[in-house]
Length: 268
Length: 149
Image (cartoon, rainbow over all chains, first blue to last red; front, side, top):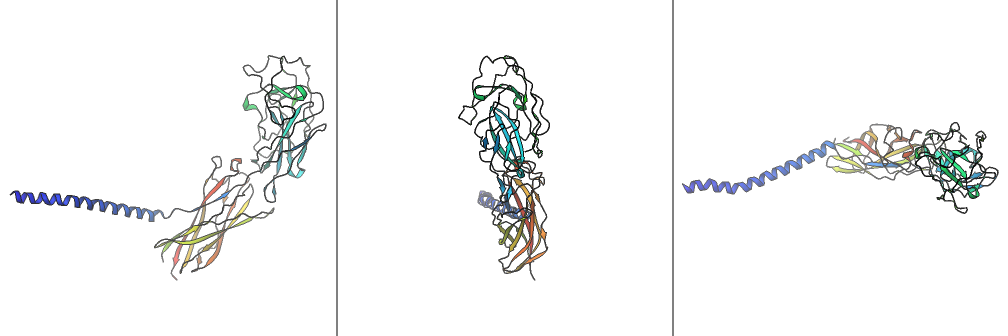
C-alpha cells in the first residue's frame, strides 16, 4: 500500500521539474515566435537620412567713419555659394540703448549713412544680415566708437532718456521696462515711435530704409525717474568698444528744455 | 515571387547653386538581404547642409540590385519625421517634401544599377528663423517584390 501510494508521489516528484522545464521552454518558444511575428508584422524600421538648413552668417566687424553723419560699411556675406544675403540691418548703440539705424537691401551696397545719429554722442554700430522674410543672422561685433559732430542735447529713445556725459558718452537716466526695449538686431520699421514707446519688431520683411529716429526732448528733472528703478545706463571708455557701466553724475545739471524735430527717414 | 520591402537610404552631396537653378544631389540605395524572404536597401548618407528659404533640392535616386534576380520596385515615399530644433517643426511651412517623381513599378535587373526617379525638397519662404542650422530627418520607404520572371 505504501509502495503503491509512494509510486505516484515519486512519479510526481520526478515529473514536476520536467513539466516546469517544459513549460518554460514552451513559453520561451512562444515568446520568440511572437517576437518574430511582430518583426514580420511591422517590417524593418525605416532608415533615415538628414538634410541640414544653412544659416545666415555673421557679418564681420563693420567700419565706421566720422562725418557730419556717421558712415558705416561692412563686407557682404553669402548664405550659400552665389547666394548673397538679401538685406542688412544696421543698429546704432548709444550706451545700452540700441536702435535700428539703417535697413539696407543688398543691392544698394554694403554701406549706410546714419542720418539720425544724434549730434554730440558717441555710438557704436552692429550689422546683421537677413535672408528671406524670417532669417536674421547674428549681430556683428560692434564697430569702433564714433562721435557725431555737434552739441549734444538730451534725447529720448525707446523709453530711455539719454543725457550727454563726458566726451559724448551717452548716459541713460531713465529706462522703460525691459519688455519695451529694443533688441539690438531687431528689425524696426514703420512710423517714428512716440517718445518712450518702442515700436514692435516686425517679423516680416522690413521695408527698405525704414528706421526710427531718436526723439529729442527734455529730460525729467532729477529725482523724477521711474519709481523704484535705479538709474541704469552704460557708457564706454574712450578707447573701448565694449559697453560698460559708468556712474551717473550727481546732481544732473539743469538743462534747457529742447524739442527738436529730426529729419524724415531716407532710404539708403 | 517573394515580397520584399526596400528601405532606402541616401548618399547625398551638396552642390553649388546658381540663381534660378535647382540643386541636385544623388541618393544611392544598395540592396541587402534582410531575412530569407525580405530584402532591404542599406543607407549611405552624406547630409545636404545648405538649404535656405526659397531653395529647391532634387534628390535623384539610384537603386542598386546586387542579387542574382530582378527586383520590382512598386512604391517610393519620403516622409519628414523630425527636426533637430524645438522651434522648427517638421511641417510643410518649414520644408516641403514633394512626392516621388519617376516611373513605377520599375524593375532593377539582377546585378544592375538604375536611376529610378527623384524626390524633391523645397524650403519655402515661410520657414521660421529657428530653422536656421536645423537638421530635417526623413524616413524613406520603398516597396519591392522579387521578380520571378
